[in-house]
Length: 269
Ligand code: NAD
Image (cartoon, rainbow, N blue to C red; front, top):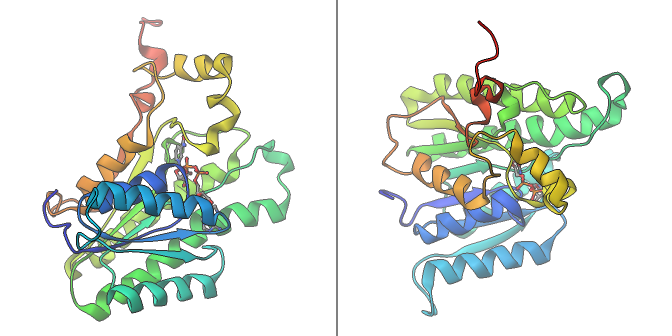
C-alpha cells in the first residue's frame, strides 16, 4: 500500500487476534510496529516474530523495526509511558490502532457497576486517551497522522446481554466522527473498522464449538465468520496513502451481517 514504508504504528492489544494480524500486516507493508500488550508477553513476542518474518523474510534486517510495549490502556500513566517509549525508539508516531477491547455477558439490569466501568475503561475511555495522546504527538510533530478505531458491528446493532460493550462501541463511532471533524484541517484522519463475527480468542465460546459456530454462521449472509487477516487488510488500506481523502468513516467488514439478514427471503408484503 502507498505511503506506509518507514511509518511508525502503535497497535494496542496486539498480542492476539485482530491486533496481532494488524501488526503483522503493517510490518509487511514496511511500517515500524509498536506492539502493545497488557499481560501476555508471549503473545506479543509471537506477534513480533511473525511480523518480522513477514516483513523481512530470511534477511536479518530490512529497515522494519519493532518494539514490545507493556501497558494497560485503562490506565492513563501506562498510556503515557507507552507513547513515550514509542517516540523514544522511533522518533515519532504516524499511526495509532485502537484495538484493545473486552466484553462480558450480563443481563442489562444486572451489570455490576465495577464491570461497567472496567469495560468502558478499556474500550472507550482507553481508546479516547490513546487517541488524545496520539493527536498531541501528531500536532507536535507537525506532520500527518492516522487513527483507526477497532469498533464492531455493535456500533449500530444493539446487543442484548452485552450492553456495556454496545455502549462502548456506539460511543466509539461518535468519537471517530468527532475527532475526524475536529482535526480534518490539521492533517489527521480518523476512521474505524467494524468487524462482524471474527475468529479470534474473544470468541472462544463459539469458535471452538462446531454447533455454536454453525448457529453464528447461519446469521451471516456470506455464511462464514471473518478472519483477522481480512480485518487487517482493510486497516492497511485505511491508514495508507490510498485513503488520503477518507475520514470519519466506519467501514463494516462483516460478510453482510449489517444488511438485515432476516430480509434475505421476503416475509412481508
Ligand atoms: P482478543 O481478545 O484476541 O483481542 C483483544 C486484545 O485486547 C487482547 O490482546 C487483550 O490482551 C487486549 N487488551 C484487553 N484489555 C487491555 C488493556 N486494558 N490494555 C491493553 N490491551 C488490552 O479479541 P479480538 O477479537 O482480536 O478483539 C480485538 C478488537 O476487535 C476488540 O476491540 C473487539 O471488541 C473488536 N471486535 C472483535 C470482533 C470479533 O468477532 N472477534 C468483532 C467485532 C469487534
